[in-house]
Image (tube, rainbow, N blue to C red; front, side, top):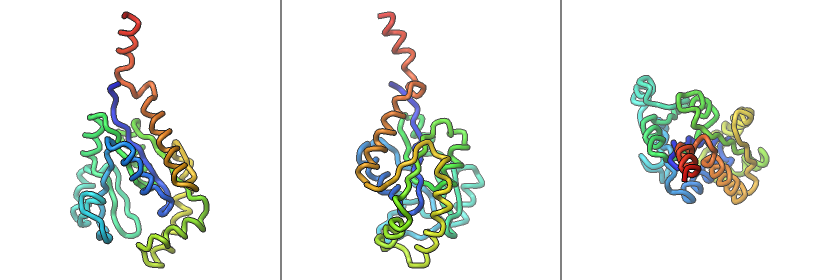
Length: 207
C-alpha cells in the first residue's frame, strides 16, 4: 500500500543505547533513511562528515536555523545540534521512514512541527543509573568531567519519558531491538497510514 513516510524518534539519556538500536534498525531495514544531524562540535575519532554528522561552524548553523532549514535544533554541552529539513521531507514524500537519534528537546520540536502528525516517538531507558554510568565509562570516548556532566543531565532527560508514544527499558539489547521492530511494524500497518487502502477495499467489494 502507498503511504507517507514516518518520522521515527529515538531518545534516551546518553549511553542508554539509542544509537546502537538505531544502527540495528537500519541493518534490519535498509530502506530506512537515517537523519544525519548537523553539529558544531568537532569530529570524534572515526567519525566521517556526511555519514555520522554534518560538521559545520556556528555561523553556518545559525544561518540555516534562521532560514528555517532546520527541523529542530538545540545546544547541548556547548555545541549546536540540528536536523536539516529538506532530506526528511523528501524521504516522507517518497514513502521512506526517517529515523531520528535526538534528545527530548529535538523530539519536542519535531512533534510540534508541521510534520508532527507523522511522528512515532520512542524513549529508551537504562535499567539503572549505575549501569548507565558504566556504559559511558566503557565507551572511552569522553573525559571524566564530560561523563559527570552527562550523568548530571541524565535525570533531566529521563524526566521527559512520559512525552513519548512508547517507552522501552534497555536491559537486554536483543529484546529491546525486537520490541522496536514490533513497534515499527505495527505503526506502518495502522489503517490511517495506508493511503491506498480505501481504493483497494472498494475494488475488492466490487470484484
